[in-house]
Image (cartoon, rainbow, N blue to C red; front, side, top):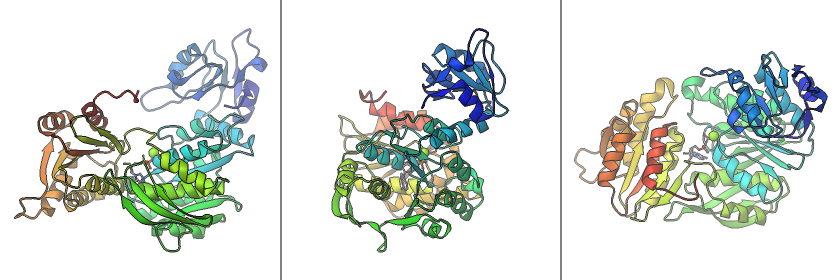
Length: 472
Ligand SMILES: Nc1ncnc2c1ncn2[C@@H]1O[C@H](COP(=O)(O)OP(=O)(O)O)[C@@H](O)[C@H]1O
Ligand SMILES: [Mg+2]
């Protein structure tokens, strides 16, 4: 983080300083990592104690200090530690993030939201911008009221670009995030059905996502997906300039001639006000075309040339784990681990890639539950089951009883007379899936793993992939 004295942290957060005897608060400077997990603390850092459902962060202050934290932001003083004591550490953390950005007026802040693809697009944009200047776009999915201030507090006085992923589980969430990290550029990728159970309706999801572009200043830029009617409609609620990106004819940044190669990697021609260029991505899945267009619109707005953006896009590889992570096993089996998360839209995107990668090969979809779909859950699982059949997947393995509707949907969609259709099998958990796959996988097979936050499925994909040096 940029350097702040303990007194400044107290002032910004409205807190009071409680320091051990002999420690002069004026001499305590926070300039190291800001963390809510004591294990991520380091010299000169600030530990933020949160009280969660399962644990009370105040219990870990000592561990944070052992790792070098200079101070802690707390709701009650901890003996022997330089503390800033506040009423609510969440509010205080938000205020701290806001202040960090207020002190860096030259920093370009980009907010990214959408139902699917936030992390992928953040990673892609982070990779591109990093070729132009110091960029903060942390690996992983830091998109909540905790993740966003953690992201913000990573900036230093050298940082030029900050890419912030913003997620929502309800109305007002993104407005809150945008107040603590006010973006100059906002990207809305899509309005899907992720978390529809919590939102109540797709309209409510659209309203929630639109809060990002509502928050943009008049001199800002809204990058909107031209191919999603609900996103396109957000042009009406922002005072910022709008750039439409997508495959629609009127998109200002537009892709044509999209083709997936045998590895599922898209190529396309991009047309922009700065010219046109052929682009070949190294990432797997057609959905990355839209993500790349969004990244391109942002990066050119921030002064990069079309050519340098395209060169960076073409060299981009997966950054955050378990998102269309492809491993070619020595025995000829291809594994696609996309088990970080799942909703109906990203299931479709992954199945499209599987179909392309599996041409002339046997394809497997090892699918688990999609969480938080509310009343529509069974119907949406059944639709994905039908999609599996429509994509010509040979072997469907449905993992976990909660996903039974997916298997039922696939069976219902399979023509009874077909001998070449999808074989549908259900297993209880990832361990059972492992036994079956170990017994049956054969050279040439392509296997997709996908589920909502099912660590078992992710690890199954990892285990089948075998040890890989580049991953830690
Ligand atoms: N633009 C997109 N449209 C649909 N699915 C996408 C898109 N981008 C990525 N995905 C898929 O969605 C899933 C989640 O991707 P991720 O980037 O982690 O999204 P988020 O951060 O929004 O949850 C992955 O399985 C990925 O393959
Ligand atoms: Mg994410």
